[in-house]
Length: 258
Length: 215
Image 1 (cartoon, each protein chain N blue to C red):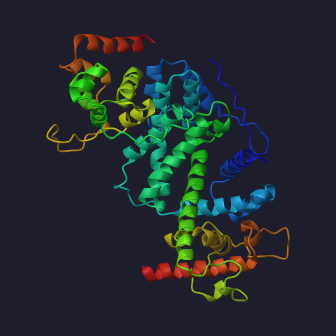
Image 2 (cartoon, rainbow over the protein chains, first blue to last red):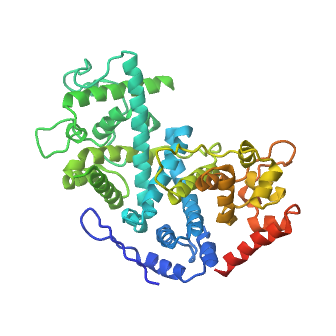
Image 3 (cartoon, rainbow over the protein chains, first blue to last red):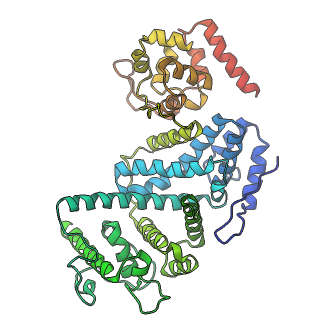
């Protein structure tokens, strides 16, 4: 049975291609009986020559879905979810228990909406780089929950009539206010460990903090071609500076709570 | 660009961005913003989240987060997608089932009456209710029968059956440990073992098994 080609393209316009190993696995799997196929897919040792890669599982799920064999689809899906669970769970831990469970469900929904959508080729990337696709969905899910948490927090702040930030805030100190405040030592531009402290900063301030203090982007620049925190986040430099001050305050509070 | 196209295009860019590098970096972010300046904000926000997640402390074991329960929730999602039908205006979102026998009781059926309506013995019914039957072995015919009798959607019934083993209430079960997936029994094996099922009903279900094996 011929393996159907992928039809989706990279953002550059180049067509997706499966690894030859994946294509070979799919061809082999399609020649097996259903029972034998399911037995092989249950092999969890990735070093085994019989191990069925996740990219292959995605194709097989779509194949059996087309054939109306939803029982097999369910079995294969359970195997795939079992492989995803540990990785996604460990990454979304930072959301806390309740949001982790909902976040996990959202990631699974994102993966399988694409895989089971036979009308479109949205799921093609999972047949090329499955784990990259899962990781990407995990990150966007994390972002969504963090933003929602911060929006909820902002509503509380607004309800308490506390001053917000942004352009009208009184927090801007001329020059480089964040340098005058206590904070973590800036490390050389390299791969850095972002501690729980930074992860605890509200998303809207955290992005500015990481981009400026860790990834070393300038708040603003006279060079119109240089990406800056201000241009990337679509905010005025005054707002960004206020956010950086807020971020430092939250860091200081986190330190005081230790 | 339509919203759907915009979202699809952004997802493609983010997928490609992640695939292009093992770790987030300043140089990588600059390059991808150069390629897609209209996604600068999304790329920047995505990168900071990527950095946070990548460096979060994952060394602590999550003993209190049941991975089997997470997987079961994931399977509920999958079954929901497989059974997806556009809801009518009259249909409300169904609450999950917590106990099949209680659902039948709400329809005026006793435990025995429920088993009879399904063509099962009370022993198999009890195992189904406690999640002691391997969900993947349950024939669609039974799921549809249960749904019809208790007036619930097949997908909701399937989601309940996928939840895995649960301890029985009362004195029906005594164990020193929580039952696991490994303790679950094949449906047709449970039918064979059931001493309370009628011969005609037993033959019906075992006939389904035979037809399934022939395919």
